[in-house]
Amino acid sequence: MQSTLRFHRPALQSGWLLLEFSLALVLATGYAVVRAQSDFDAAVDLQVRARAQGLETVHAAAVAYAERYFDQIVGMPAPGTLQITGSAIHVAKRASPAGDMLYQVADGNHPDVSDLVALRLLPANFSGAAIGGGRYRIALEVTPPGCRQDCSIEGAVYVDQPFRVNGKIQHPRTGRAVQLLGADGAASRPENPAVLSGYGGRFTLPNPAGDVAGILAERFGYYRSSQPLPAGASATAE
Image (cartoon, rainbow, N blue to C red):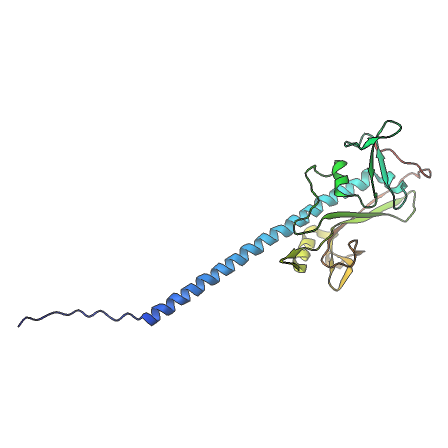
């Protein structure tokens, strides 16, 4: 009699293998979601940093504007057109009757980014559009009102729209931008949107964008003891 050897394979535990595969798939999917969210958050954080850096650039230009054209700003009607003449002007709009190059800022208390570009206070390629939405704006005033000497020029640069992600205002990230700006950084909060609250609650300012929450801003001020100007006179920037 011929005997036959039979080899018996252990039965595959298909149920357990399917469960393990499903668990691995869930873990891989979860990791991919976490990684995607992490990458997304990192990209948004870069936008917040760029937004704050752009505001700092405009802030430095606004301070230079107040310093360079202090006498003209103090001497102009409020509100009024700021007329600047002299060798400090590199981009001329037209010539004054005296032959000097003349540049006009339509609203001297609210110079536009294009004005600061024309005055060579911002780079020529600076568009004024803020990353994350809105545009950079400048608002300033002479204090005390109507003063002719020993005056201050105070104001703020700000983004005129809140920072949004998928249509939702990002208040915590705006707070992070305020931290990046430091002592002069501010933002309008949902509970009191008409007011800019400074970093750490150190100061408050009226919100130049109105009753809008999530506005990012940075204050500035420039003081100089100025000689009084005759009524109607316009100083020359040399």
